[in-house]
Amino acid sequence: MIDDHPFALCLTHDVDRPYKTYQSVYYALADRDPRQLQSLFPGRNPYWQFERLMEIEDSLGVRSAFYFLDEQHLLRDRPVRDWFEPTDPENVPDGDAGRVAETVDATLEACEAAGATLVDPVTVVDDDDLADARVVGNEFKRDVDRYLAEIGDAASVDSLAELVETGTMAPSIEDRIRDLGILDVDVDGLREDPDYLRALVQREVMRTETIDRLVVDDLDAVAYPPATVPPVRMPELQPFEEMRCELAAHTGLPAVVVQAGFAGGVPVGVELLGRPFDERRLLELAYAVEQETDHRRPPEGFD
Image 1 (tube, helix red, strand yellow):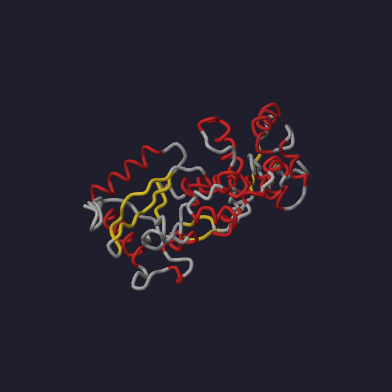
Image 2 (cartoon, rainbow, N blue to C red):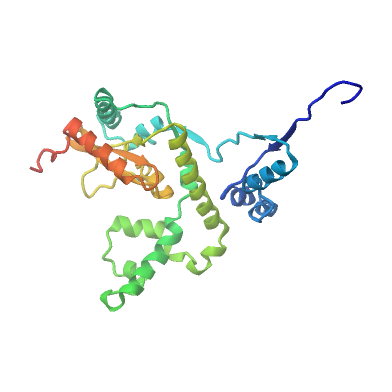
């Protein structure tokens, strides 16, 4: 009571960044501020102190309110619908413009007519963020050399460098290895390479935010074409920039491709990416798509 007037005291807490796991590492690298790593230590991270704060409130007989900043996604958003269209129109064979998108859309519409719930638009991470998470150029030499060492005398060469020098690799694969400078990678220094470490953090951020999108939007899966142009005939190569499988590769989330129909006489697929350890649901969805559309059959000339 103050001057015979009742009053109430409201105890509140404003929490701007309730770090859980990867955020502190991400901000330390992105902002070049090692102080962000302090939140990894006990007693510095508010996310892990809620139970202790509630114990203090109980002992004092008070209650308080917490207000959290609705932090934006660390990565840029892009509608998954954009993945239905080619990145470079020059990669699209004459007469095939839009065929993949039309074929996949027809399959999704058939699933909707059968009772599936489609949510559109849905966002995924941006292509530039996907590119920043690539580590195959860093790890390929290391992993191949480890494999060759494990099989020992069963291998005819001891390293990736020796394998390339044999001249027995497909020219497109050899050219890619040389063009990316994979043979020059210092595999022993990867753990001290800031670009490599930043890419690893990016992958963890991407995985967490992709799962967040699936949960918040209550999605069983995200659907998109695994490639935006029809398959090419050998010895031509499928344009790398038209492939849409990087999200599954970088996040480690389960994905399955099921046939969506045909475009120009060749099969076209639809990729379903789901939640971690939810392969059973993905297989159920893939089976349902196959049963509803009946597209799973050999293309003409392959009977």
